[in-house]
Image (tube, rainbow, N blue to C red; front, side, top):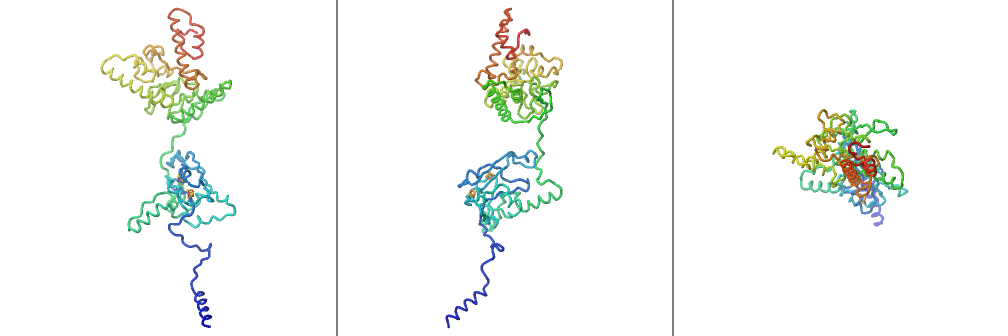
Length: 450
Ligand code: SF4
Ligand code: SF4
């Protein structure tokens, strides 16, 4: 009897006790501060794009290799609404393999990825594990929709707790633009009719419009990109490889490929190129050309300074040679001494305005340089040889060292020109093979003999 009463007492007290269970999923426990579920990407509300640049550092460091990231050029960089030149294009994480180790969060240099610290991060029950392969829109959803009110990076939160215990100021937020306040600010911008992203700086200049060559051969307006030196070189080499492939197959190199080779040979970094087939007038026929571009950088004659980096004909080496020659010229001029022929030749060939006897730009300006502009012959006389030779289309497009390379054909043309001059000086006719070489390579025929 005593035992029965004791049992009833336990039943009664238990039935009156406040329950310790909750009705999940309607009710949920508050999650501990340091809990973490799976990694998610952060949305930058200030620039209306992900923080992630797709740099692949997390991908390489993930111990289970469950991540994939693809980067591309950021169109917002050109618009001036972002300072990220590159941005993530595609991103996948396979949550079925992720072991929530947090390494991706620790190694990310852009603080673009955090561990989801909400219940939503834990609730990933699916029927098919392939559904646990999340793409970029899934990974950005939590941050973009404002569900990630306190983005979690363990290193930040640990530091914050440590400072809190010591009674110090909390650390500065590691990432800006991903917080609730930033999302609200973006919504306010949109409500006021402003763009979603903050305008960081002026949009980049649009592509320079330059006259091009229509497929039929006539002039047409064409967009020519303003490229860096390495891009120009890469595009030129690609076109040359294409031309070589045609030659190796014994086929004729298409005009379009030759035009591209010509275009990228005459193009200078940061400038629109001269239209293909107008090498003699790199900045437009009739324009008065000088040794300097409008932006103050050095202008070189066509074919000069367009070699690959490290090559004697590279932009850097030509600039250094011209600078040295101009310095020497000034020193000698101030001392009242005569300018040696090699200095005069360098100044002329590299397009310096200081070239004694007139610069190379006078003949290249299509006669627009005004009275007193020296003829090419006069300039050549002043400098020894005005070797601003441009090979005819399809010639000298081989790689360095091959018989059709620019260097070898230039040497062949110069030998032919020398022999032709010697023959004319001796009162003899120019041999047929020499004439053929001069005609083939566009060499100068002494006395204008045909
Ligand atoms: S938490 Fe670890 S396992 Fe998961 S994606 Fe990041 S690095 Fe890979
Ligand atoms: S999350 Fe970070 S480390 Fe990973 S690709 Fe994006 S920027 Fe790079």
